[in-house]
Length: 149
Image (cartoon, rainbow, N blue to C red; front, top):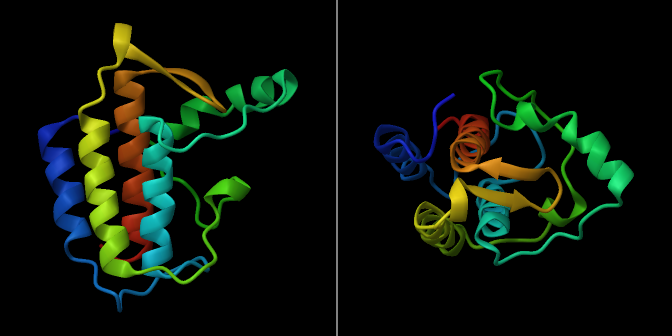
């Protein structure tokens, strides 16, 4: 799996983001392109600490840990996977505002210090910097493919 921390993969994501327009339509799902941008930006902000998710009870955390590797392995995600309620975007969003916010968040993510080479995710536990980079790349790639980018 590619990682957002790889220069070529990072540039690929930025280039693909710049191909999106307010008229880009999804191949699956219910989000429009601006909602998708806000959705992936919100997940970036979880990583940067700007958005907090409520940590689930220990038994749910244990269950979620069984699916950890799916977040960063080489297998593509299936279409229409469920998402956390906090990550569902239903309102009308401004495309240009959301695109700029996402680009800013990607920059903040890239600059994270990863103290000790690791950082905690509120739902899935501790990930290495490499796992975070793969996870963020995989999520962005999934949604960019959703919109043909």
